[in-house]
Length: 325
Image (cartoon, rainbow, N blue to C red; front, top):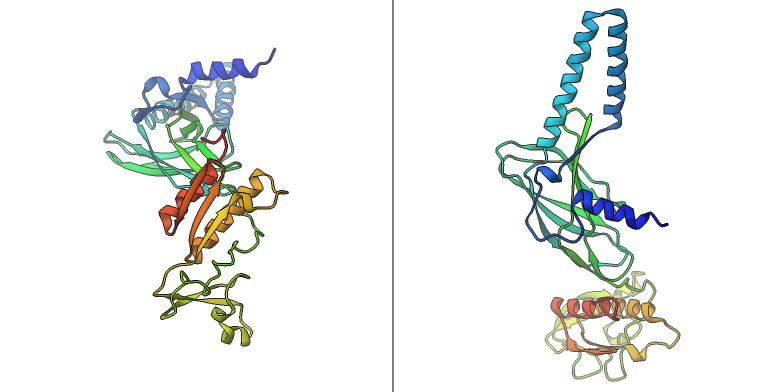
């Protein structure tokens, strides 16, 4: 009999978290859990030995010291619990990232009470975070925006996993924590191909050789040279001085237009390799100041330029296929 489903069901019942929760998420008394840390268990064992020794030898000062330390440890349970109770959690923003880079989910924590909350830590519950979580404080009647970094391994939508907010304040003897899962997801673009060939210019689309090329009145700057660039626009003086190859860009005319076509890719490339190469071309075409269109099965985006068009192309590539909607 497999124990994993039973363990998952037990966790859902115990921690009262089964699906993404609608905001705001209130951390009430029944959602705060408290257990001793390793240091707290060690102190408890030490106090037990001290108590037995005091009983055996009738040590009055031993009784006093044992119960004094025990009372302080007991009070730390109350303070650790109060450090989390009545906080509210609201999902923030998450920017799209390329696969392989960590996605940073914004989580807004609100403290409605007049006492500050100190030494808090927010982290994913069952997975290793992409970066080491840091401790932070919440001011009285204030807010704090924290980011949880989650590693990305596949394109498409990435759901924020279950999170743990914990504290060991004030003495490190007691660990108080709460689990919750805000309803927040981020978009993961395909990984850009690291060694993709140059942009697929057609015979009528070479920069500087068509009516829709860059204008030649106002010099706009230099960009990385590509094999398809016209020799007339190469910065030959920089090359003659031993510098890297650069291509001149100009303002004043139309933009070169290219199509990034799924069907034009080599048949030997699989789906992910095709998406990776098209992603690289979208980035390069945007940086080169070109108007570019995208054709993939089921989707055609007309040639355009700018951040919204770049995002639309990358979204279409990220969500390509039936399992990434």
